[in-house]
Structure formats: structure tokens, C-alpha cells
Image 1 (cartoon, rainbow over the protein chains, first blue to last red):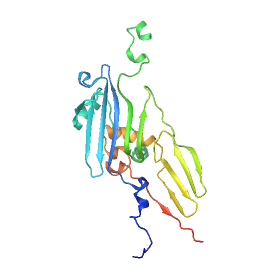
Image 2: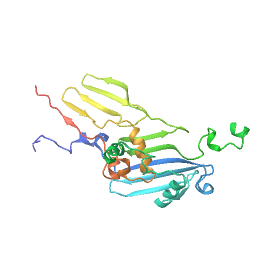
Image 3: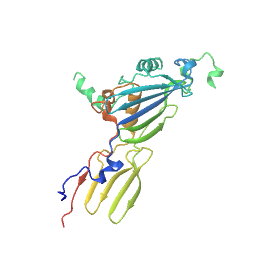
Length: 111
Length: 139
């Protein structure tokens, strides 16, 4: 059969990792958890590790690990409780100010 | 030390490292344009400035490859130029700065709108190179 040329996505060149599409991403953050403002130090220890995994299908899961690496919880409500206790407000622009939010400020101000 | 000498002094007058509620490290896997990136923060104020730099340049007869690297793992080969017939480039050359901020936001329960990019959290998953362009040279 004659090759018609043109753009062919089935070409073995596209099998390389350069063009692959990944279905899952994972992000983790380690928080210090000591001192007088610690959240359940008897459970978590000195460090809390939060792992969030999300897929292209829209599923998203949390894992909250203690200092020793034990799985303590998988609920978002527990993560919210930790953030409240450690005074981390993610959606507050005074804490995290993105470029997009910054450009909105002059638009929303009165004159 | 000053706190030991003057115990009645309020705690916030003494320069100490925070004991709780600070972020120690961030780790991301297949996130935005990074295969794998670990970032360790210092104990006090952190400034993250541009990390992207050209590490080495490899020139072949037919293929010019600029290897951009640094600690940010954003697509190791960012620019490949086939001098003969093809040009293959990645326009999404970003540093790791905004990815670190987005990773903190996402990992601590924020949605994609809070990160300020993408219309869903699934748009933050890495997808190979963004586009490719072919330029056939007609002799």
C-alpha cells in the first residue's frame, strides 16, 4: 500500500517520551509541626507530609503522613484542620499572590 | 541567647526559627512542565529567582541541541534544531518558580483557580512537549 505522506501520528517517532502524555501527577509538601502551635504532635510528630495525587480524569486524592511515614488520614477535612491550626491560608492573596491575582487588583479598585 | 538572658522579653523580639507551620520542602512529579522536582526551603525568608540557564551546548553536524538544565527539571532538552529539515521547539520554557508556588497551593488543598493558571487541576499534569513544527527544506 502506498504511503500517502502527510501528518501521521502513528509514526514510531511519536512513541518517544517526548510526545507521551502523562495521566497522573503528584505533589507533596512537608510542613514543620513543632512548638506551641503544633497540630496533634502526639500523632504527627515534628513533621507533616501532605501528598496530593490527581489524574487527568479528574480524580484527586490526599494522603497525610506523619513524621515516621505512617498514613494518618486521606480526608481533605483533616488537611483543612491542619492548615487552620498552622495558620496557612492558601486562598488568601496576602499569603499567596499569583500573577493573575496581582493584575486584578488595579481593575477592582475604585479609581 | 538574648532570650535566656532576658526571659521576660516577648518571644517575637528574639530572632528565632519558626518551630511550626513553615514549609520545609516541596516535591512534584509530572507536575506542570517538570518530570520530577524537589525543592528544599531555608528556615527563614526564601527568595526564588530565575533558575533557568544554559548548562551545555552540543553541536553536531546535523543536529544542534541546546541542553538547558539547572535544578529545575523542566524538559531536559528544551530546544532541538534539526538544521537539515526539521525544527522542533518547546515554547513552554518556564522556570521552576511559578511551579513551586502552584505546587504549594495545590498540595495544601487549593484549586486550580487559586493557582491562577489552567481551567482545571488536570491541566497541571505534564504533557510532553507542547507543540512541534516541521519545516521541510525544499531544494
